[in-house]
Length: 317
Image (cartoon, rainbow, N blue to C red; front, side):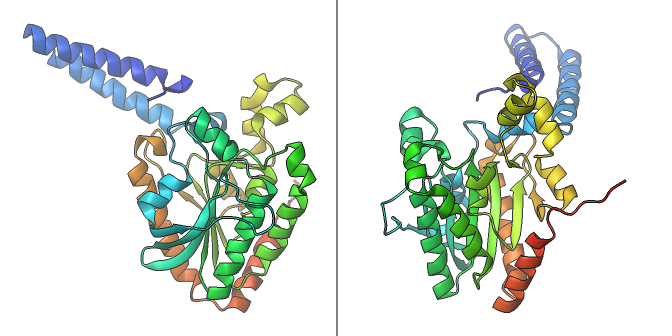
C-alpha cells in the first residue's frame, strides 16, 4: 500500500520488527526482548501520529488512491443497487453515478461522485469532477425520490465540479445553483456524507441536506489548500498552512457547527479497512434516517432552511 510521508516512521519500525522476527526464527536466537521493545515503540508511534493528524495530513489521507470511493461504499453498505443513467438533456456523466438502493432495509435513492484508481478509469470518471449533466442527472434522481417518498443519500467525493470550457458552455453554474434551490424544498429526508474530498460548489451541488456528515479523514472546503496557498502565499508549497487556517478537516467543521457529525475511521484512514468504514457509515445513515423519517415534509423543510440560514454567523471578541 502506498505510504504517505508522515507514515514513514511507522513503516521503518514495521520493517525493523519483521527483520528481527525473521532473524529470530531462522537463526534460532532469542530476540524476544528486542522484539517486545519494537512492538511497544510501534504502538506508541502509531498512536502519536494517527491521534495528532494535522489538517494537511487528513487531506493527504482523503486523496489516497486506495481509499474507498462511492461505488465501494455502495457495494459494502447498500444492497439492490440499480444504477440509472442520463439527465434527459445532454447525456450521462460517469463521474456522478446514482440510482435506487436499499440501506439497512430502507429503500432509498443514492447519488454521488466516483473517482478512478488508474488513468483509464479516471478518464472515464473525469477524476471525480462532474459535468453539468452530472448535476442535472442527480437532480432528476432526487426528484424521482421525492415523487416516490424515498430518502436521498448523497456521497460526496470530488475536488470540484469540472471547470472546462465545455462545462461552462453547458452552464455548470446554473446546474449547481438549481440543485441548491431544489434540494432545499424537497419533501424527503436528505443525508449527505463527505467521503474524501469535498471541493467547493462541486460538493455543495449535492450537499444541501438535513444531515451533513463527514468521514473522519475527509475535508470540506470552498477551495483546495493548494489553490488557497497560490492566492494568499503565491506558492502551492504553503498548502499545509492554508489547510490549517481554513479549518477544512472534519473535527474542525464539527466544532464550528458546519456539519452534523463525524464518522470514525480506523487508525490511518478508511483504506486500511474499507469494510469497517462502510459499516460505520451504514450505521450512521440508519441512525439518522430513523430520526428524519419521523418528521413531516413541512418540519423537514423548516429545519433544513434554518440549518443553512444560520451559517455565516460570527461573534466579535
